[in-house]
Length: 187
Image (cartoon, rainbow, N blue to C red):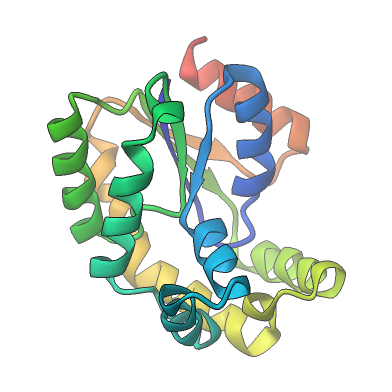
């Protein structure tokens, strides 16, 4: 199963991805996790990504697309994967389409977790308090939501008419969101 999991920061993508991993036994491909790991290890890519992440901006496509392409080519992705945090722009979606076509893969579903902005701010503020993540500081949160609205939301239009787009109410209880996702996937 090849799934693209979409939604704004704080929508619950990480929580739902963890459940999907367990159910379908496929890896989560999270650019955010890859970038955070590179930052922690202080690799050149990590230090470059950190500058953008700390400012609440997207890491440039040239860096992101290369990382994703390498990751999708690994053996654990042959039976499927959950993309989380990529693509974030229409240009990245076009790049993803090209990568998948080259690999002979097609997405089974594009799942969008829909959550209003006021709830996102509440969730992210709580996560910042609990996890002390630099990218969840109040001054960065609003920038991230603005970047999402400007750059990522157009992906909904890109995928809406694809026949594989599924919109899920992310305001529900975590278990209900998961049930809706599984039902939308049809297996």
